[in-house]
Length: 145
Image (cartoon, rainbow, N blue to C red; front, side, top):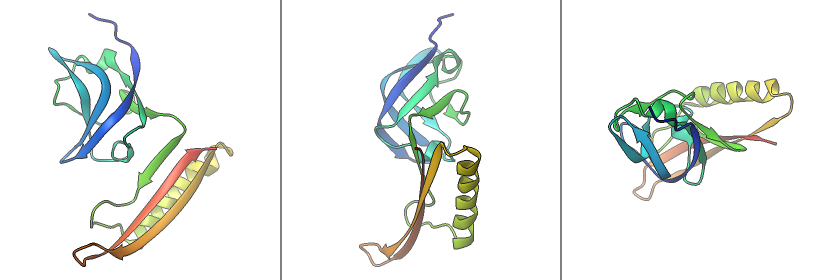
């Protein structure tokens, strides 16, 4: 058995399908192979990561999964660094105002529990897509001070 350890990678590209496909700046070992990226669940926090973010990946664990495995465990792959962008919606799909407020309240609770180490900025954006469809997007930035 190889001892790969936890390694830090930069996200070089990201695509969202029925999962989040993340391309990385290095090799990640997988069962009987390896990959230049990983697949993650299309849920928080995995769907919030952006190109340029740094991820810590436990390669001792990834080597036991097939290349096409969709990770949803932050003990195996997690963002490292000082900020996290948490979008409230994507594309033309929007959260209701009530859902957005509930989500913001949960993040505000995290900020409060951090003892002043983190801060929260929020926004609501409204507009019209180029083809005339109206949209509302909500988003939050939860970051270390």
